[in-house]
Length: 99
Image 1 (cartoon, helix red, strand yellow):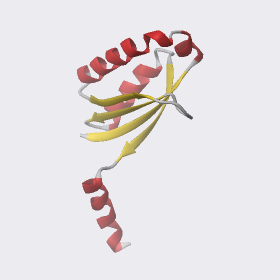
Image 2 (cartoon, helix red, strand yellow):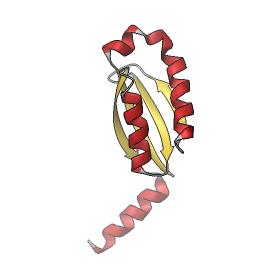
Image 3 (cartoon, helix red, strand yellow):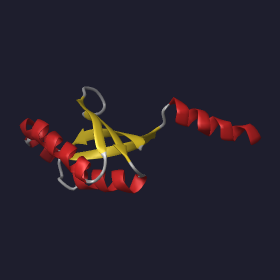
């Protein structure tokens, strides 16, 4: 499974209903599971972004569909990053040897 980090920003609608955020996060975790992904962590943050999601999914299509479903609620906007663990990064760097 691939790892993804999603930076979350509340919309105006999401801020108006901020007290529902923990319940919505749990529903998102359950939706991810139904789609074959796993939410490894949900963080609410202070600073530039309002939250961070760490998600494992079998492929880009799955995580894209999952996050489009989340964005479709109108409560958040996301920026998604593909994350590579050490082993994956070492494999990537091995491909640089011929370059």
